[in-house]
Length: 250
Image (tube, rainbow, N blue to C red; front, top):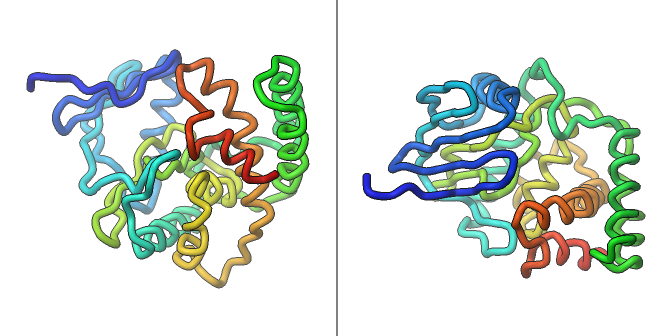
């Protein structure tokens, strides 16, 4: 093997690829432990665990290709998006895991974090006040009681691999746990609103999916992410990314 690919790297964690092996280095051992536990419990395709040592997790590459990326085109067909919706439903219907996840933060904690973040974005001139105010208003619909489900917690489309119309693997489970199912659906369709109907069709018509709550999570998640992304070397202002998602709510 003549090269090591840096898949993602920031101050908290890094993922490296060496051939067909991914090495995840995380400063927080608890996140590694949570990821291993979640993969063992999830009733959907997950990467094969090769080994783990303190602060490092080695997993095998999954077949297929990512469904797409935020800010980029989707490589998947409508059938692939629907298959992903069905896989997400299977996860959400599974027995609850023992710990809360990223999607399981309390209403009070989320509201406080959101208010602090909105104030910071405006005070520091990161985003216009009217853009923040409008999206804070939209985000309010997500701050409601919800029934706990088995959630992935960071279900970006780049974390869902497909081959044709089949989901072959879902990666990056460090934020998994009990949480709000609509948080996963919103994270998965963030920046790809045109595929929301396909995802819901696969998820199942027997579930009442509140679109206002999904729209709210798009706003809420984007508001909370902008400053973190900037501080960790990412660009939320890139076309199709978080700031464009916020602008689409105006």
